[in-house]
Length: 164
Image 1: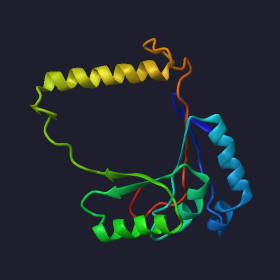
Image 2: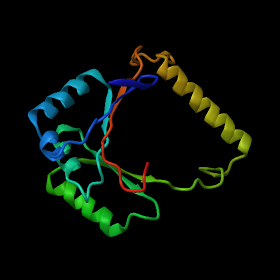
Image 3: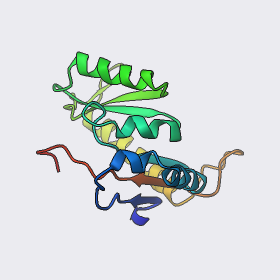
Image 4: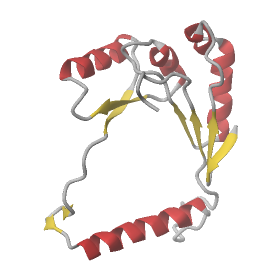
């Protein structure tokens, strides 16, 4: 485990073995996942894309669920449907879908356009709250934990051609 950001560690995958799916489905992997789940508040396991590789399907039973990450203006409805069907076929819990690489719209609020100053104030407030949370500072609520949230990113070793 290597520190990556305040309260966020990363576990790099290392060299990809010749039989990654066999390793991911092993009891050693299951023990590793259980161990880190007892240490960290959130464990995020990055896997190769679901359709060309079965790694994610192998790991889903060791996790609380899957979050599909799709690429804006690239992932087709059919591919998204196929990925959801693959998860359903192994009875995996799908937590949600993230649409990646979207363009931000003009600064707008729920009820219409916000001024850039109001948006900047909102961002500054959110950043300050995040900084307080990462330092373990709370607003004094009765059921808030004094310890900061800890997260671990288990980094997959596979990258699509052309992606960094």
